[in-house]
Image (cartoon, rainbow, N blue to C red; front, side, top):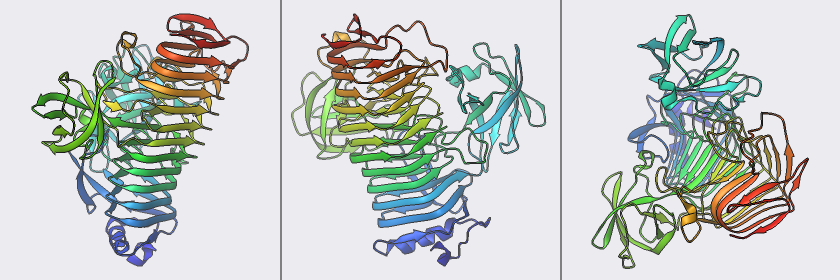
Length: 576
């Protein structure tokens, strides 16, 4: 028990040093379990272990203050027994680094003052809208900017996400209208105690009664960061807030999330949880299993699984100078000696060479020199990319619920075996995005074996057109896929699912060889207005070996366009 180190629940004292002492004690005990009494424990960053990490898909060049530093641990279990860990300031709750056989279970994570804020529209007219902001979210107005104030931090608000108080999800078709550049059009002023007013927006305005989520800060503090580790399980853990992903794992093997719930804290009145994805996996291998999890109200996707394309900057003799282009990938280890790799074209994403890595010399966080075992081909071009085939996982997602978040559903790019079954998804963007990109996010992993079955997709894409073309969107970033010989993805089977939807597009995609859409049930709803300019339920181009058969459509026919050819259900096979 952590009580042995002088720590009791429901005290205002900083638990950081006592927990560190307990973890260090457990380090010398094989198969140790550290337990907590039920109650609240508070953690401040002042005395926390500090480490510099490059965390994929987060903001880099930062040190992280860590409440639970599980560094170089083997055979360790942390059982919270119903405890809640309250973070203060910019504290990263958990880091699992260079560890194996780690189990986290039976606790919750929350922040006293999250980086997100929340308010309600109390008045709206043609000129602007007034918002009431509760005392839970301290702020200041300076020079026409709203500044969120936290414990030891201040950050300008950079965007507004409009939430429907009835559904407790993002408002129909509001999307990112008031985020990023769109937000910069507005100006804010203080008009009273706890009251501010925005004006100047010409493209979108919320209505009285809408709840606004005010985004500030950076991706500084993932809830649980896993790196260079293996055999990690997280079970019956509730994450109520984080300044980053709920869980982010990179270069790790054999990971299981079971009843890992990213959800607003009950009774808090919040309509937000994590400030980014609920869970995210980069350059992992072995297996990833995600079972019986609830992902709701996080400010990005429920899950993303991918590798990283390193861009070939230039050829230098027998070596390739490779670059990590996206700033949120800087410093992440993507290649190692002995890894199997292949080179792909930037425009088509198609492979043209495969071999093994002989050596990697990292120059800095952005550049590395890579020597390959086989002789380099003469037609390598700057801008082509290299991907790691050795670090790509099998993925099983089942029994999960994803809803009320910002953006899309499950983003999957891995050449391992993928099974997505028995899930419920209701997202403002596509329920599933099967992509691949060597031009912006540089997320790698052409699909080779995917089964999507026995799921319920309900009223997805209510944020259209912001986050996807259809309920399932297969959209590798290839500008003119029909102009290339070859296909990026292959082996995708979508069967025995229920599409309960107002949005007409069930499946959109391109560059797939081997795609089956069969034995699915489609029920039309009137939850939201139907977009009438989208005539095809299945819309595919640059695809081969397509099967569409046995789908059941309540009150209509299944309209399809395959490689420019129109048809209606039943359509057994469309030839390219």
